[in-house]
Figure 1 (tube, rainbow, N blue to C red):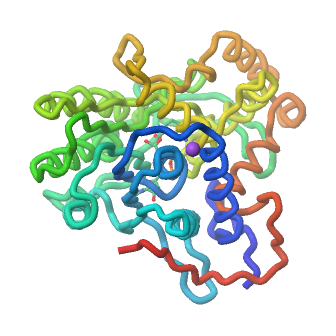
Figure 2: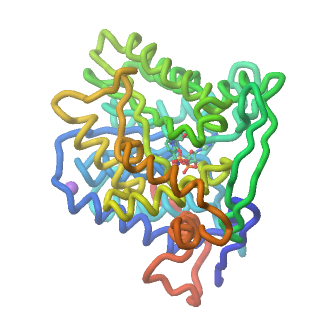
Figure 3: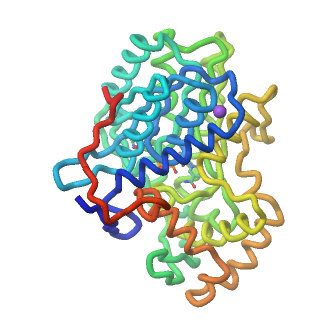
Length: 395
Ligand code: NAD
Ligand code: NA
């Protein structure tokens, strides 16, 4: 079939297999251009199909020839209906990894559930025996609690007061003020339940009790801080409470890993266009200005550049550099004073008329469509493609 982008709000309902494959191959090429390292060797990535998780899987496999198991939640294709992008990404990754003689298998299902955890443990036991790294890169709006069956929804709301600032509709380029009502009721608790650290801890507890974690095992979850501009909706909003909880969980997990000298880290990553971040108000305007400044400074990175740097210069450096709160920082270039000062200046000038020149709206849009395999260089979108793609290592 011919597959075209079909957008609704900040999501795209279709995905292109060839474009997704091309994105994955480019990320693989990037990692192959870097020196090969010794670690990690056996890696479990939760949220492995898109964004930072996919980049973590690719960095593991092609940076140090690691065996990888990926867990993700993606929609398979059906006749005439393309799969979700993470499905095609995973298919492309596993196809290439197998060609290159790398172990790569995956599990598609709800990572929050006991069933998927048990299935993953079984696969680790059968095939790898143990793992030395677990990357936790879930971004989900909902979680069904495995013990009670209760379904929780996370919300993106400020806490304490109404938030008003500009945002951009990146499809139309319209810059306009939005107003978001503060959280109420159980909003904070629910968001923490979905995006906080409880599920990460559950994964570790299960795998630890089954003795499948190596000595010196490491685990990393991803967080975000960002500037004062987005603070009210992000870091000091409901999602920020969940990130606080995730960060606190890292210390708890490190405690539970003491006897195997294991360590849990949170890595604070840069703001990037992903399916998760395009849903957050204000962030698209911030990102389009940030991209402009970072590209001008020659310090722009995508997920793969970020994670390559995380592995080579942080996680597997002689000593893991941490901030005063004990976190890994790879948002260091985004948060540079000169970068933030420029973004703040641009923010004041940003209107529907000025944004195309003072911001990188095109870069934002390209990245957005790239997530779904569209607007990818070198792909012929007029060519018929088979939407029914299999994932070779899918269990
Ligand atoms: P993403 O949407 O690209 O990836 C989310 C992944 O989670 C996908 O692989 C998806 O299949 C998987 N997933 C979602 N629900 C699942 C479920 N129930 N079971 C199994 N898998 C499930 O998002 P991302 O932006 O790469 O986010 C990953 C992490 O990085 C998040 O914690 C996010 O907060 C953090 N982060 C993102 C940014 C950013 O700007 N995008 C910046 C810093 C940190
Ligand atoms: Na390499």
